[in-house]
Length: 274
Image 1 (tube, rainbow, N blue to C red):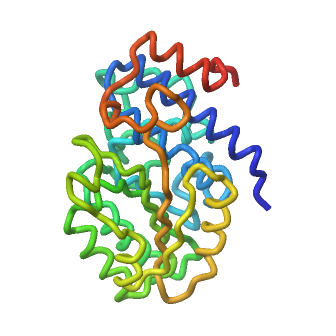
Image 2 (cartoon, helix red, strand yellow):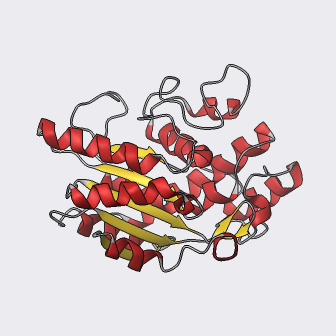
């Protein structure tokens, strides 16, 4: 049984760490990191089987951050889980820091694959899930994509592959905040109807409020029950969620908070108190 209040609190802490590390770095991706915090909280503090003390545990569930520019949300979760000391978050994007602008599997424990070139993560997740299945390991693979990212053709080749091979130990999630660096996804390159498209490609599809923890948890639970189909969770989110000055603004796709904006953010998120 999921402790919804606990997961919501962890999402709040993730958001606090995101804005702090981005402000200190002076660069990075604010909007899409904040919009995914609830999803990441549900995965790392409820659904996924993983062991921070043994990152290479064979039976662990795997996570692929296909939208690699949202690395701060993953780094915050890994630190809060105990994969590395939380003080390391302050080194984001600094010279020689293992916390690069996009995740690097050679630099940090808990990172399964280096990501950042958009459109590739779902293909990697397919390969992981197939390998796990062939090995008879009782583990699942989770893959988080951005909605602007799914404008790329490779995503749809991967969608066909996952359906064709009935990869039912794969669950993908779209952080559907409808904003990308150049504006609204529907205006840059319309991706709608996302849910019907994945259904047509042979996927099991759930559509949820990506900031409603109960809905997220329920979809993740139900995905495990689906056989002979991959599952896509379309999570309707708000870019910059949790901080009013960032919410729903494409401007903050790749812009870090200023010192003044950080103060506003921390106050709205609880003054950074843990």
